[in-house]
Length: 259
Image (cartoon, rainbow, N blue to C red; front, side, top):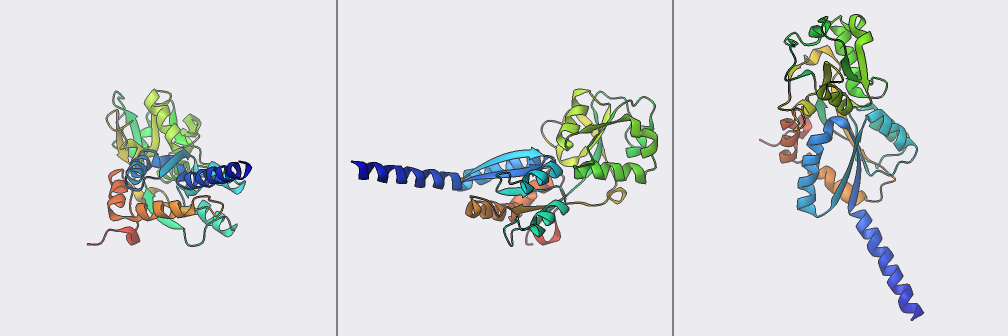
């Protein structure tokens, strides 16, 4: 009986480990909130594996991953954080992949009277009291927003009106809820279901800020490397790239679907 109990316990542990290996824990930049939910749902349906998504600022995730946070994949809103993790020996060799380029827009609620056709310069309007951007200390979209404001020569004039979101998703919620009059947010969120029909946006010219090039990696500490590699292969597919395009992302040349 004792031997049988030991066998049962061992089998249970093996099954539990197998089930764990089928769950992929993903730390993802907030601009991917809707696009990655869509992609993950399609992957789960096809593969039978589970994708657990956590969204936040790339900088905060970077700090957590340096300290051993239990994630399998990191989708960053820049290239710098994944490269630093790779240099530190925390990344699975060969898993680095530049998956998309993000874009920023000036966004206002549908009932706003603000004319945003002049983009960042529209923020000079005296009626604007609060302007939401992501915190540039750790959010790449916040860094892009500051760069665009400086390029347009308006940053010093409106800096005291800035309200900082923890990440670009929280920034968008500030404007959508009325806590800010206008915001500079990710195009991918402006096109998402929470904001698409609730406001207006004007895209900020791409040459007004450094490219928001984004990359992902599998962590060396991952307990689901096989499933994680399968998921990244799914992300590379041409039909998956079309999902990213639909949410306003630019797709790198090497990821273009074959003609």
